Length: 411
Image (cartoon, rainbow, N blue to C red; front, side):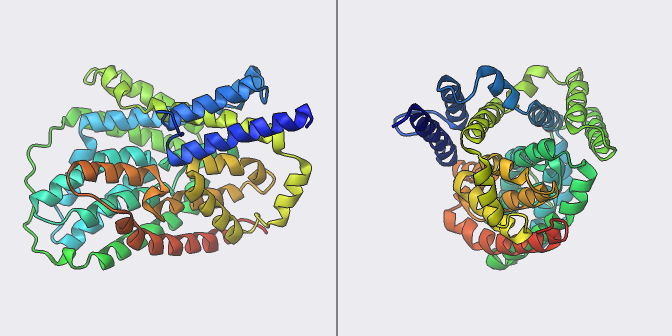
């Protein structure tokens, strides 16, 4: 065996071990989490010679990381100010039946997730929905499912809706407004499907008597802090639509909020998921090493024969890959192939990798966050609970998305 062949085997083993570990959340005989797995994989690629240190640094998309960091900081400031709690309770207290309460939960979770990171929205919304359901003596299951599934569906609408869309936005350079114009209708349809199937499956629970406005204690929010954080967040979103580079707008907004004398910065830092940022950086390096080692013109020609330029085929491939290795790794794995297509193909990838997260409980981090919060509260959500609602809603949403975007992506 030649040294070149041996080197390729080593790189392939590192690549597969890293992606497999990230997909399953662990590696055998280790206690590494996903961030640690990605970091070890990146280091192994550099040590093996697959990438030089300089190439590794250049492969990290700092724009995507800056955008994610900025949005996490803004979400943290909004949470600390009490914005999510106040806004959610304002909407919930105007619901007059279990059906309208579910509609409110789906709409609020989807709307927040459209502009803020969906995982962070789940962390805030799930405990609140649990308390509301208990105060009203309702089965919390349909409402928790509504939070998880709606956060994925709503997150498809914009570049800032979830981490994989942030990567796609940085790579494709599609303007924020154009991205939203193409995907917001798909996200709206997906939210409608989430409500329809959740309501149908749990129609028995939604016939329960409704006790009225829930009493879950004081809002523990500060009006001045909420106003300041809301104005900055609205300014950042407006800057996105006006064409200001998303990382710049997000970092500027985060910096303004960090100067807020009413919130101690260390409270914001604690809510920023450093592990997620580290995982992104590691996966950028691992993906670049795999691309450098294995991506040949012959492989690209074979990929062309798969017809990835067709929206329906790309939807199927991206959705399947997302459920095999998770959505962020799927986007990075597809990157060299989509780069050969019109940039509008990235819209299909964004749609499919996001909505595919609703297929099963394991499809997205948002689902797992809600499931863990529910488990700790003694209200477990099973794989079947997600499947019977998420699977039909997702299949129809993906079909609508492929049809809607089909005209934008030439075959």
